[in-house]
Image (tube, rainbow, N blue to C red):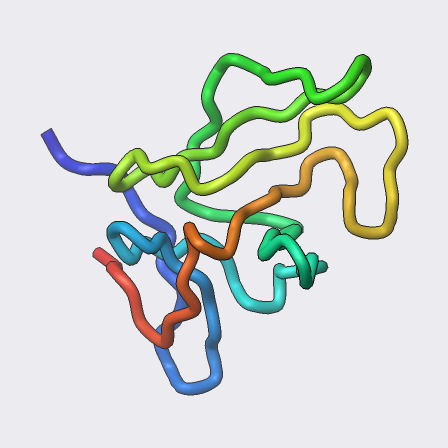
Length: 113
């Protein structure tokens, strides 16, 4: 059986992206990082590729829900997706992703193919 079909970004000197720290699978363009919390090493992204969501939703507070996001290549958890939020802010909006910097690497190249 073949592995997952991966989305790959163009690999050149002008394209910057984040990859999974464990397997180097492409996860997001650098330009998709909307906000980075300086004290907690957490970043908010508008979109991600090569992730799958865990079917169980996790309540944060009443009316707020996230789903765990996993790399489709190595199945490591790389963050969360906001499914429902009571109050949205500039950075926190339903449908965005929250990832810890310890789980991502900024790479000029990564696993592709």
